[in-house]
Image (cartoon, rainbow, N blue to C red; front, top):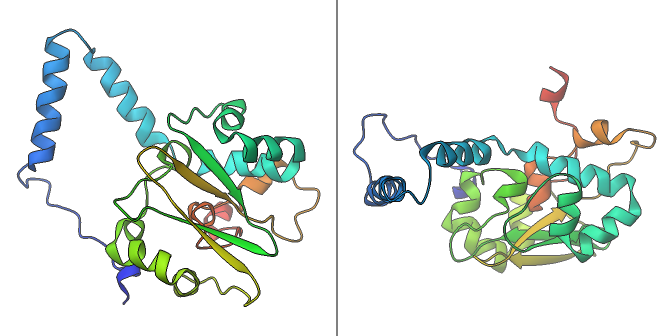
Length: 208
């Protein structure tokens, strides 16, 4: 099994807190004690972030597929366009579009910066050293290992996310989807397609 497909084992429920977790708890308690934040507000924000899933970004992509003017706004100012769909991305965001000639791939070579406000939590492999290094040195090989074989004449562009800037891929609309509604099209948009390691394709769980 390759490093990209390796899964981390979940920590035991009774495992001791890490230093970072202890600092996080202490900071939260201090902010509440000082009256700078309300405990209910913190909990509400945590729940809001945890409820974001790839379905959030899928709605935005589906609109790009059905509304050319919106797609152009998304490419010009992704933050403002996402807000039109009720999605507030609290960090500068750039959308890049896959075409017949260009395939885009996002990575964060320094850590695991990722458009969480749009597509939820990153997969374990996105945070791995293997992906972070090879996405830059061998992007075509990486996407092929993850199941996407690109034609030799397709240009692969890699976008390196940072703490100050995130990227999201607008995958190509699948063939045979003419006449579908935005809601139907959204079922073809996956987390991996918005990272750039898979095509947009209908997932079996949508039919269960």
